[in-house]
Image 1 (cartoon, rainbow, N blue to C red):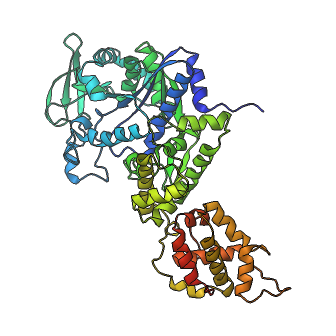
Image 2 (cartoon, rainbow, N blue to C red):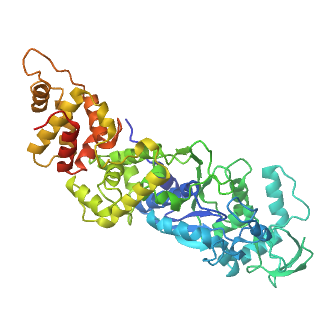
Length: 532
């Protein structure tokens, strides 16, 4: 059977056919919270970049913040006062919290912090700075001079008629500050200025150096040459027939004399039953919020394990535990080879905290310890985990605490009762006898592991086992040939009822090993009919 090649390696192999030097680009317009749907692009770019490096390419990863785009509307998360800023470049609008340089930085700052936690460290370009420092000036001149040819390309590919007054350049009005209400009336290539009129009634001239920006389809095509982009992921909306990529290919070749980058088209991340994530609709879980809940390597794994062309269904509630378990199972497979090994390698980025303590076990430990970090360390150590790297264990504990508060379903939550729950009165005689015998076996034993506890419960159903014999004695059934029928499921229920006041709970072995043995002995004796 042929070995499956990971999609990132396929991208790298295709790109290397075109040359050894590569710049992998990713970018987004920071108009709102940058969510995990957007993360698919940047993680996809990072995976392609790492695959190129692994194959000996000279590669660089860059991130382009499209902060010179206009604010298109008042989004659900904005105050009505932002109505006056609709149409202005994001980089020129006040910060919503008043603590950042501008509107765009308000959303970029937490995003860049999240990238660091994800082990992604691109070179960052801000589009307003590129325009203002003159990086786009020659591209603007070329676009204005070849306006008719660009219009023809767009018409041929989209089937739409371009208006006679259309221009590939949008000036920023020096009066109202808007970029989407102006019309170009002329330009001077030598003076590098563009004349315009604005719907606000103002007219004037702006410099090509920061006085406006190219329209999206032209800007994207020009950017490829300006930054030397050779590989770039983008959403399926840009990949439609006659879409941004199709027109970009023609424009970059025919207008700018540059070959378009190798495309990586990706599908959307769907948020539970709410559909595709979008900042403008409010269907969103920001990357920053998600990193409060789940370890960074799990978020990388979410993207890296799935081919870009397939959509991802993401639910931060109970299905998140399944995702975590899938990754941790892969992580624990010491002999992983081929595809699985590659998926793990690309998910396991440098600079990310790692601990051998599993997320699901931490869910149990955290609740047993009631969130007390000192107790968490103590319990983790007793369970056999390496607790020297407290920073990483604290990160995992914080993840779990936030998950329990924000997304965990009610049945995943529990609390150990301080006294014997009233529900213990519902225990059968057999269950009470089991708890008493269980307590005595524990009291006579040394330190027990989670596996020891788990196996001990099952031995209650085995005739001749110490715990089964004690149960028979307590119930007065020591004279043969009486047979005591024990169902392990009922014994597990007895444990949960005695400790939690409910019939189910976390994985019993982990749960019991997280509690002090003396406490368990006392509690089970209290619930038992056996009195030593």
